Image (cartoon, rainbow, N blue to C red; front, top):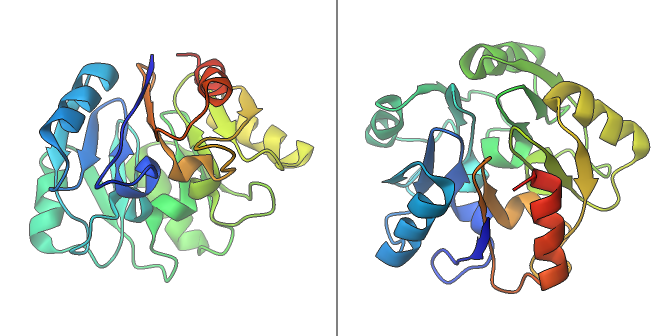
Length: 218
């Protein structure tokens, strides 16, 4: 199932929130009705917090059911909220906007190719999956260009055949292309999803919504 939502008045839900099979993390200013919609649709608990003192949860955090990778600028109090729910890795890599630079599900992870090999190994350990460097549509900020769950993935329409094949091999799901928010190709910035459902901005067209549901097998 898929539904409209906004976070702080923004249609870019993937920038301001993060979701997995285990939980949804949203900013403290999230409307109660939106938090309840996320809880009901995605069928997981919702936690409200900031990351690095900002509401940019999705840009600064990537996660799956096992663990979470977060920006090195996260505070101890913020990290504590997450550590009570799952393992976390606080990135020391200079490319530490984890949500922008990592696509992850419970099968694998694709990572910005400029991240260090040491960081790749640390990410594998905390998420409990194979991690591989890659791009989507030539973009190194892979997390903004793709949204994935354990049943499928939706990516930037300009993804190459080689990139698509790599994603399918690592994430172990079928990858399809599409847009959200009326033609926005950076679908990872627009959508919150797990295997139960998805939330997308209200500018998303009916055709785009159908494509999201199809790609993520909702």
